[in-house]
Length: 205
Image 1 (tube, rainbow, N blue to C red):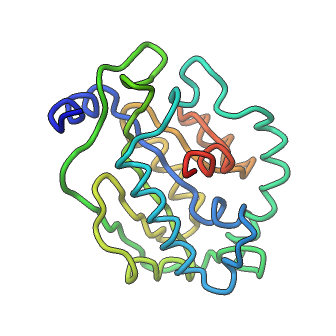
Image 2 (image 1 turned 60 degrees about the horizontal axis):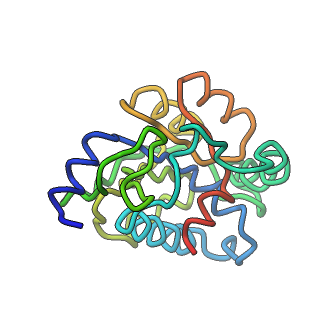
């Protein structure tokens, strides 16, 4: 599929994937707590690869549920992600501080013609990814380079506030990836669709 065709679809679909970095990171028992910036850098790499090859299946909320048992996942994973925001050993930290946005510009990539269900030709769609980080995990900005279609957003305060703000101010379709119940309600009230970390992690394989 040609680059111009991908760019055209990107403009037509305009899907933003807003990732609660602490919550997704905290949902995997892979030793992330020993090196939070390193774990976030690995997540960044996975997101960059996903944005490049496209997401399989419909856009969450476009005619199909993003994930079976979403409510159950919200209850089981919220502890890990919320603790991450609190900066405990079970979380990724949420120390307030001056943040910023590391925007990875460059070539736009997308798929073929979009279907009513939000799928690109070939069953793939190509989102703009906003990875929100907070606390000590903000050091990931020193570990990763620019990646097409991936922005690292260093929260200026609470990561949840940054995510909810993005969900309200970005245009087009917005899909927030988190299992935090309160944050999910805030994002849905802002008009965004919400998917759980499990949905995103399945896309990596």
